[in-house]
Amino acid sequence: MEITVGIDVSKKRLDVYVHPAGTLFSLDNDAAGLATLIEQLGPIQPDCVGMEATGGYEKLAAASLAEAGLPVVVINPAQVRHYAKAVGMRAKSDSIDARMIALFVAATEPEPRALVARETAALAELMARRRQLVGMLVAEKNRQGRLPPGKARLSVVRIIAALNEELAKLDGDLGGLIEHSPVWRDKQDLLASVPGVGERIARALLADLPELGQLDRRAIAALAGLAPFTRQSGQWRGKSFISGGRAAPRSALFIGAMVAARHNVTLKAFYQRLLDAGKPRRLALIATARKLLTILNAIIRDKKPWQSA
Image (cartoon, rainbow, N blue to C red; front, top):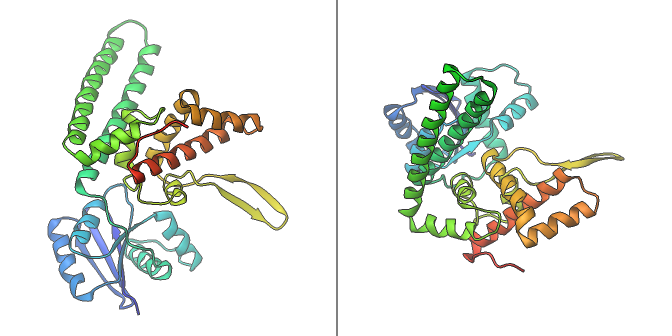
C-alpha cells in the first residue's frame, strides 16, 4: 500500500498526517521544524507528500522537502475542499485538513513535479512586487485626478514620484537578474521576438510560467487558465468557458493578445477571422491569447525566434 503524507501549512505551524498509518503530529514552520520533519519522513519513505498552495507559506516547506529528495506536490486547495465534501467531511481543522490532503493524494495519485529553482522563485517575487507597485501607482493617480489643488494633492504627487522611482529600481533589479543568466536572457529574447510580446510580458512569463516549452499546448493552456471547458448534460449544450489556472501569466497573455491583434500580422488575421465568423470580441481575444501562448510555447521548445508567415 502506498504511503502518502498530507501537510496543512500555516504561517507558524505544520500539521502532518501520515496515511495509512494514521500518524498525526505538528511542527513549527521554520528551519528547525523542517529539519525535524525531514528526519521523521526519511525512514518512512513516502510515495508522495502533498500540501496546499497557501499564498506562499508553503514555499519554504516544499523547497526544503524537495531538496531532501522527497516527492512533493503542491495542490490547489479547492480540489481538496471538493474531495472533503465528496467523502462527507464537513468539519474543518488543521489536523482534519492534513488528513484530507493525505487521503486526496492517495486517491488521485498526482504526479510530483520538479519545483522551480530558487532563482526562478526570486524572479517571480520581483515580478509580484512590480505588479503591486503598478497597482499602487494606478490608485494614487486616480486619487490625484479627483483631488483639488492643495496639500492633499501634493502628498499624492510625492507618493507617485516615490513609486515611480522605486519601480525604476525594481526594473533595474529585474534586468540585472536576467542579464546574469544566459538561459533567461536567451529565453527573453526568444519571447520578445514575437510582435505583441515586449520585455515586460516576456519577463512575466519567465517568472510565472517557467513550464513554458516543457509541456504540450493543451497542458500549458490549462496551466495558464486558457484551456476551454464545455458543460453538457443530456440534450442541454452549454457554452465553453475558461476557468482556473495562473492569473498573472494569463493577464500578461491577454495584454500581449490585444497588442498582437493590432500589430502581429498572423494573429491579427486570426483575430479578424473570428470576428468575421460572428464570435464576440472577448471570446476572440481569449482564443488569440491561447494561440499566442501556443506560439510562445513552441518557440521556447524549439529555441527558434519568431518567423512571420
